[in-house]
Length: 273
Ligand code: G3P
Image (cartoon, rainbow, N blue to C red):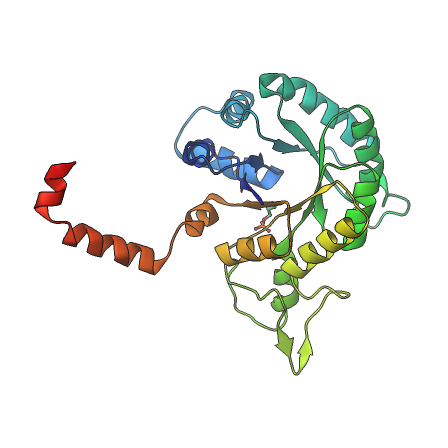
């Protein structure tokens, strides 16, 4: 399974690539806002175009997803997706355009297919696409049919929705079991999906069943155990914040063992090397 960094913060991108375990980057408008706000807080002058260009160079050879923000119609997404691709892909040849599976949020009649139409049009123009905000296997299948290279199920947000009414308070990083949680003897579910990882697993299963080449990119992962579970259900990619990248490497016994080894090392051995 590939590890992607879910961040637009350049220092995090640089650290993850220096470590050599980062296989790509995902960004979205909220993550770009976080990066911009961070720069503003430090009083730094913002040249976002230059900033993104630097990130693309660091990630050269691996995919970087940039998301459209003009989402009122398929046409608007295609126009913006093409502009983003034209502007940024020449930097390092690694841009993927992120398109929401269904950009309509006011249930406007007839608007439900705009994301799928945009995906198909961008793929026809040979632009790689990451289809985002996927919450059902059906949405994933539709995106794959339209030719999306990646589909991004948002695991953590499914968990949030399921536990919100029954298990408050909880924090975003809290582990939610892949097999779901029960309340009064009933497993909580969203139309047959019992957790974010269950959603990822169902999509993987459907894609494998039909030999679909679209990669399943498990997104909105908030802790290392969820990353492990994404791997166990066969996700192709897991994207995670930098904090989770660090968490992947940590265990109390590793730290304790290191402390003891450092204390025990005899001076004679130190002198040898
Ligand atoms: O990759 C999707 C991600 O940025 C959303 O994460 O934690 O806000 O649900 P989260």
